[in-house]
Image (cartoon, rainbow, N blue to C red; front, top):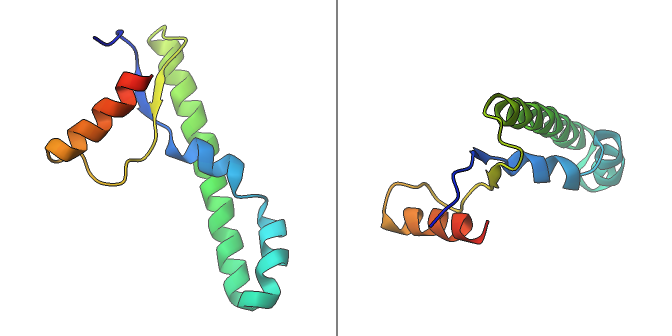
Length: 97
């Protein structure tokens, strides 16, 4: 059975760390995609990083409010949890936490 712990969606936490800095993305993709599209991708990277920072702060605040030092952070699943397959995917993640 599961421990009684806080569960939060933390997909953007990993994304924010892995995608690089917007300026580096812009420079790397500029010649392949063109300036306009590379700028849009870099803007999207910056947006994802802002969301990751916000999500991390929200999880920290929730953890503090619930006095839960070790919340379970669930990544984005491949599909919605609207059927037995989705519930099974969620269960497998929670069971490994």
